[in-house]
Image 1 (cartoon, rainbow, N blue to C red):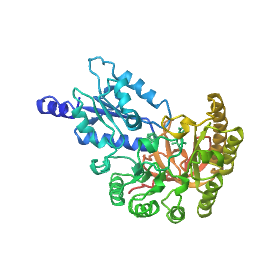
Image 2 (image 1 turned 45 degrees about the vertical axis):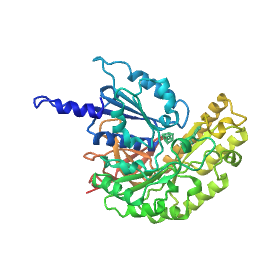
Image 3 (image 1 turned 120 degrees about the vertical axis):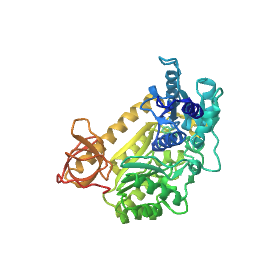
Image 4 (image 1 turned 135 degrees about the vertical axis):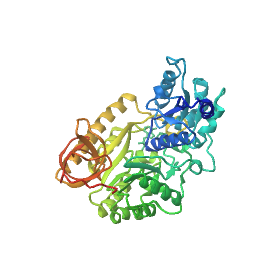
Length: 458
Ligand code: 5AD
Ligand code: SF4
């Protein structure tokens, strides 16, 4: 059912029975940016009179917010569409919206391959969802424009509830790494004006957020009238906001002022996600990364000089075209040298339209698999070492969700470790002081320093 259909039903309903409301569900397939967009699409639909559903199965509108970064994303989309288009027990099926980066890159093909899709909308046009849903009655509606007037000018106010919130400050990418589709799907770098971001952050804090993560494809290239470091400084002045993070950064844009901010701003958490992709300068050149192994390591030295305890995270690609065993050995050695707290690793995935797709010396799948397994073992060993080294630290954790066992809660340390703790009476959103007492591959165990609660936002 579309917004206008819902409105028509609302108008027709009698006072005895509650009015039927069209319910939406947004499924995220991608990065934090994709998660932010999903939340904002929910805001757009709510502002148009729809209500959230708990699952796709009981929604009237299902939005599939796709990711295009590696292959298989499109296949996931088509299998979801296949499930959704089957009539339910009452004969109905939901309105199906294909959104996100696959919709942007392959909108026309989705239209051909999946006639059940009612709306196709790209990541830069979803403020137009209500109009598209109305237009979709009887015909497919599609909008994969990259408008000059940014969607943010048209989005309704945030409705986010919760201790930790994402805030998109920048979108798009001008770097053109030879493996990556993002410059094509998300367009060039565009920053939101600082004043709008400060207002959105104030609203988030007023609604209970104690942590804000500033997100963007190239967040440290932020240029919305001030630098990212200056924006962080402004946000740090907000009372009630206790923690600031940012992701994802490019090594090339790690400016002196951002590094200095890690020393000067206590609310800026000591954690940096700084993808390197490969430890081999030869491969980095073929990737068009505009940094070398040495310049990347020098950037980390500058950071550690001002913030010795900073935890590092990275992204890696194995099996980029032409990657030899010696190049891969350089990747393993940079993992050991940096001592990442955590890292994400991927097999190189050919993306049509990107320069690397047509490079010679594509690496066989079996070699990629084998290198990925070795790299992941090294990353896991590094994460365990990092977590073990933090045993004995006294620190604060922000409680984010219930743990697996009754009474357990999971909070995040400043270094983004998941800390499992039991604190009777504590609530999600509390910041509590703990001692870290044990370390595992994916988490640490902590005990509260005192049973007394410190209400974070109070
Ligand atoms: N193949 C594999 N991994 C990729 N990434 C981006 N493009 C590709 C690709 N074609 C990875 C990079 C990036 C992360 C978000 O996804 O490591 O940092
Ligand atoms: Fe995926 Fe990139 Fe789109 Fe995020 S921006 S959803 S990682 S393709």
